[in-house]
Image (cartoon, rainbow, N blue to C red; front, side, top):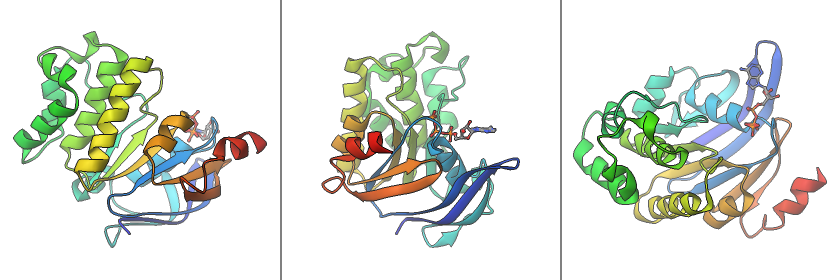
Length: 227
Ligand code: ATP
């Protein structure tokens, strides 16, 4: 297993948001986490990144990272495309990408630009002048620039026009097929998630209520609306 989450509990102050999450992601696996608003999906992503107070264990690549700082987790190979993107709006596309990178930047930049030719065209432009979809491409690209073994994607489809969504979907498909990066994606777009994922889990009120292969979970929408 590349990532093992064991009995993970997360809190904001006294409020407990995650109630003992267990999940494992293999190398090269595409894992989708689905669930309604407020279920705790972003909290789980932020817990893996080290941004939330947690109990339990997070084992990454054989090492217990539960107590490590966020930047230490990035260095070990956890790249994140966070909710709200968190880019530097006054900086250019290329500077946003290069800031995230320590070495081997040219090859990785080349790969990011091959996934998203549109942001190559705009590479000298300030991020603040770009559309939401273009910014999302930069945010995914930036996460790739950290040379991740595990890529965490928090609702990359949020608010995007259908044509941009196809572009993002194709890029994620290529990452799946051409690299051995593992992906944990949080999505409200169940169709997108089922199209891409190998395995799927359903998170409701801070608990994983169902998990399985895409085949086993293809009626997930039924479960989704039953709970
Ligand atoms: P969404 O799809 O709406 O983003 P989510 O499944 O990602 O939902 P979270 O954002 O993880 O859910 O939120 C889980 C719960 O934690 C919600 O009840 C939310 O109100 C609460 N919460 C989130 N962030 C904080 C915070 N910083 N302080 C206190 N409570 C928070």
